Image (cartoon, rainbow, N blue to C red; front, top):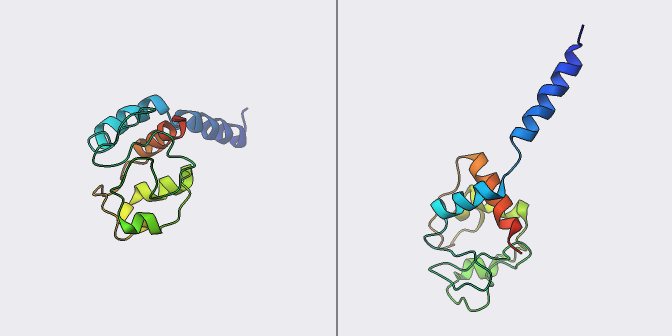
Length: 123
């Protein structure tokens, strides 16, 4: 007889691997949600928003050659990490009041996790 603990552990760890973030899927999420305003190619130009290649580890309000950050973004003093980007993508205006980024935030946690995996892979 298999104990309930073993079954629970199997379900827990099995579910965890199914929920793992996928950078390749995140690239599609980027294209659908971010690509209209941002590029993500190494050495690529900026669009309405800054190029997000190398965003992880960058200071908020900085991107070489991009001059259109809001004062709120410049003043936010955030070192972008997976965690801080995740909070930002829940609701940009809630995290940084005065940001000019019009995106309302993700309601789909899987899409957000996949996008974060993609952004973290861009270095």
